[in-house]
Length: 152
Image 1 (tube, rainbow, N blue to C red):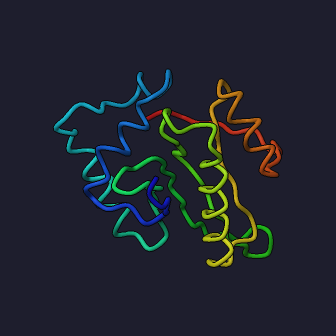
Image 2 (image 1 turned 90 degrees about the vertical axis):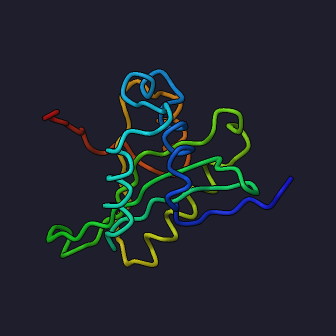
């Protein structure tokens, strides 16, 4: 097995990332991993990659992308001007789940948030993802808030 590493995503990683986003019941209904990818994915990557307050990361095993997440660094006035790290779009390849890779990915992301001076790391998760809820709680996250979304 090759060395597992985590790095900032590059454009050639986009198909693998979208495939992971589409690889579950919720993702199948909202993502389209067919090739060539829709231009919207490429445009979104360009916007993320050019924003210094965004990090789209991939976990790799050799040349294979096996995990991903996105961190958004948010400045705010609450909590005495605290910075927050918002973690979204977390996925580990279905063939690699159960190996502790998700925990490694989160440890890396939390370290990045510390490096950027964040006082809080937060995330949202779909109510139906009960396994994810248990995973986040095991990592020390608390279900302290109720989230709302408005689709436009």
